Image 1: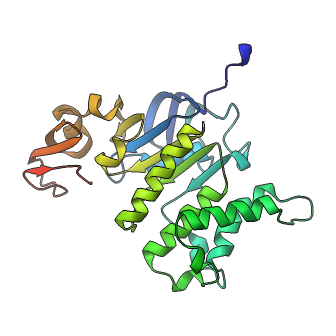
Image 2: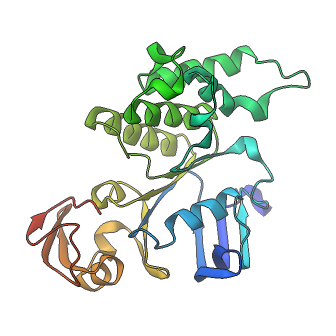
Length: 270
């Protein structure tokens, strides 16, 4: 960029995303700057995962354009870390927890595939962060769902990427682990790294710089407190509610939606 201005971490123009020839969302325009965080919020099937996979380069765009770190998605794998909801490697024996986390460093390995001291440091620090260092030698298939989630978060963080993409990262995590991961996301942003999180949790979304409400279209985008209105909640979740002082109050549910049930003070998880 001229004048030394850094390129946006993500720049999408008229972006259409989907699977095969079937579009899920069309005409997306947005940008994410370095050091900023974005929450993707919506119900199952709303397009959150599809958008994350498109940013990660795992799905091709169906239309429009998207640049990641100033280039095509997947052009710089060492600078992007993606954690999906499903982890096929968790069923491949005899992988241990430390083997999973070490995979994050593959893009950095030299000609002979040898780990460096820096690779070992990144793995060690990420496992300590998520509290799984004592599980390092344990086979992954012997761990609980929460322990596995911590291992995969450690893998993602060990990449030390400029862009971190997380799909429902709080799933199966206990409260202390959720607090650790959310604090680390804020630390990443302060260090100039960008984070995109797909979540059902309005409380989690409110901690991010920008929230995009998705319902197979872009319902609204902006700070959580500015865009959560009765109209956008109805369009996104099929619920009627209000958002005030960091809390979501659901006043009624529509079309049999059961996520919050009647009166509920948030944050509300969908």
